[in-house]
Length: 483
Image (cartoon, rainbow, N blue to C red; front, side, top):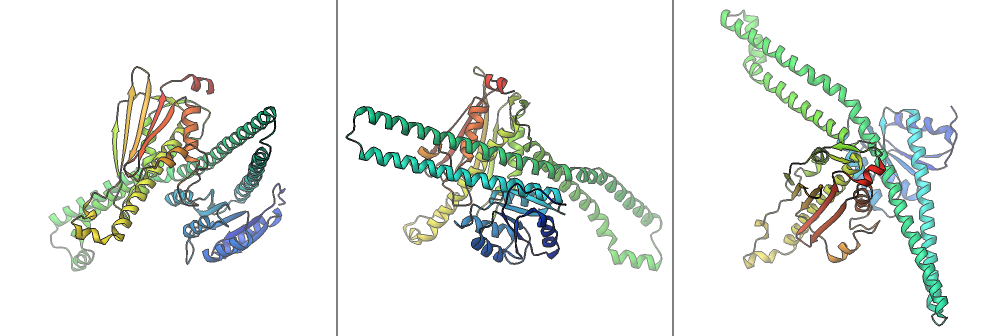
């Protein structure tokens, strides 16, 4: 089937499975796109640096360096950091998908491949890639024009006051145009990112919800049947204490006492694990509400808890730190009229930033101790200082003003005065290349202030952590107009 080509581009496919490479190559054969192939992570990095493809289709599981490591290295490389990466993985790898997005991937293609879906996703991200290049070109032109105007203003300082005034007015217009352009760019990125993430998460949750419910429903019966077999065997032992030799050998071989003791515990463990998976599915479906245009009455605490459950993998202990403690100080709140999807995105941005700040603080403290061994000679042991991350979430309701207040505080590295002054600037980030876009707080501020008529503020000191404060009205004229 011939597919009409709306965008041209170079596609790099990275997969160690020849069958997958063949399927994708055949799918893209008639599109007019140039296809490059790599069979491992090292080859993908080398080809990306040499050919600078427009999109990379990257398999997660590969020999040598896996897809996540390859993605991280590509995003850290200035030559390849802007190339969109689409992971190829199975539907059951939910946690891996969230991890991939946090490393900088823009999308996923699920296995087994669907012909139309692969073409649609590649086409969409090629269009976004080309649009981004155009926006960057326009941005550079605007910046160059501003620089030229400033140079002319310096050379013509002796001109009349009227001419100076005109130059100032023109410069102001250009600055305003640049600001408007940046705001439009932030909105475009937010809409595309939330649309893609929402569809991905909702699709995964829908696909695995039915089999999980089926397993949960049958585990109770399986547990009951197992117990019935155990009860029946115990009756046989009671009334037929001396079985035949062959039966007794089989009893000894399978260790029947251990089986009767361990089987109920196995069934209970399976039930708890499946129940936990069902809770995760519920949180994913709650988080990925995609109807941004509909105002709904929701439980704020449910949105926060869903976000925390999705971020649970980042809160757990690892080789570099202990588990990050979550302290919930929830007040009694009524249902709040809001846009659930965007508000959940704000919670995700703020909580993820809090985790990053804590990890940076603990790493800085570890390096300080490692580089100053002489402090032990002075009787000071920094290793005895509490070295645990903590995030505190408080919610209250101002009865007189009918405003809901949500505070998210961490004991991370905090912010300097310079960082606090620039924090509201779009594209500003303190994170390394490939780990931050500088859009999270700008998007959060737009969601709270423009969509909900609320306020987003913060307080921070270096080494003392940061606290963000969200205030949104229970019901707002802005919400009524947008609805």
